[in-house]
Amino acid sequence: FRTRASCQHCGGGRGEKFPVHLSFTEIRKPTSMKFHLRSLIATVFSITAGITIAVFIVRMVGVKEFVAHARITDWRFAAVGFLLYAAVNMMRAWRFSLLLGGRMLIQKIVPIVAIQNVLNLVLPFRAGEFSYVHMAHRAGIAIGGAVASLAVARAYDFMSAALLFFIAAMWVLGAGNAAVIAWYAVPFAAFSIGIIFLMSARRRWRVYLGGRFIRAGSRAREKNQKILAWLAATAGEFFMEGARLGSGAHFAVVVISFVLWVINFMIGFLLLRAAGVEIGIAGSMTAYGFPIFAVSAIPLPITGGFGVYEGSAAFGLMLIGIAREIAVRSALILHLQEQVFVVVFLIFVYGALLLFRGLRFYGK
Image (cartoon, rainbow, N blue to C red; front, side):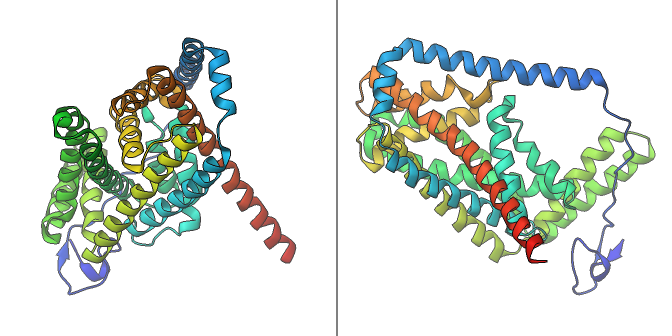
């Protein structure tokens, strides 16, 4: 045990005793060629499956009809939507900075968020989520701290999105369709409430749980149980990082998450208008909510979630009275606009970084 004043994880304070934060980092052997080959095969399969499904959907709705529908797309709405998308990613970076206690600057987190979005698009099973943990750890953040910040951020995301989706869907569809809505919203809300409860419990409880996990990891380490030691140490860091967050930081994260998802649903409204679907804000929130939860709930090994996204978006549009053919074409155009946003934002972020570094070098 160390006093709080001497512990870098708990900061200075009243001299209370907290468990020492152990590190289980080891020198690892180089990853085998067979592992890299399997990863490459899985990624190629994911991209091929995504492209195949996208082509199948276009052929199903008719190539000529799809092209004709795409030509009437109002790109002014899409441009405004991209600006809001960039603002949303800046807010996500700000939220991660708050969750990490300011140990990473926003300008360092924005590229990580951009890469995370692209890898979620390319890699199967939404494995891009873990790229944030890896890159934050390389920047000096403990793995448990990165996992804790990601879990809390996603919990508040699910809570905010589920609340807005549920209100909009009940407004548009009425109480008679509450069962359909509940199948989407309730599981995510329950998961989020559990994570938030763990991270909002009394600080001493979180420190106590973190200490128990760290001591369990130490015992596993002595028994040469490396995997169990790493898991226990990561869980300990998770709760210790939660103990760092004060009530003010939690309140700020809640507000940012809610505003972030209000803007996200506004982006959905603009992209649907760009695709030629003229419906109200509540209707667009309802239709846009279905693919948001479907892609998160069904992380299939398919690049971009093609097929699942279009099916759920078309289902939402048909629920509010859009014809089937128009709904499927609009869902595909909606999805393609989002894919373009992800790639363009990454190019914009790294182009801005290169420009800034070039100007700074020229200034020197």
